[in-house]
Image 1 (tube, helix red, strand yellow):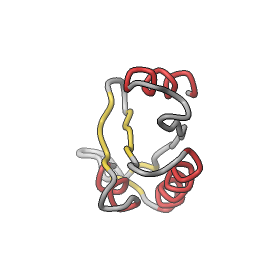
Image 2 (tube, one colour):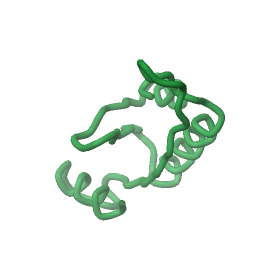
Image 3 (cartoon, one colour):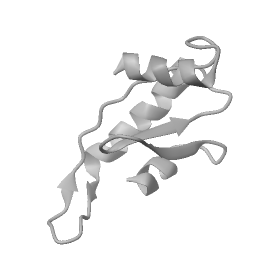
Image 4 (cartoon, one colour):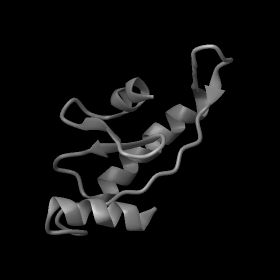
Length: 89
């Protein structure tokens, strides 16, 4: 999953696993919420055609839910940004 996400974003962006079941964050420096949504839509399109290999199982189709928040539009601190992301879910 991380490889697919990394391939869908720019070299300057970061993909990170978040606490929680099957959760990740994609950090897009110098992008606003609209730019974040564009990147998430691109990733969603890739996931619709890709299946992931899971050890001991047949390949699986990924379900994808996306939310975009931006700094400073949605927050003033890193914690507020994470809170805005949680509230957008």
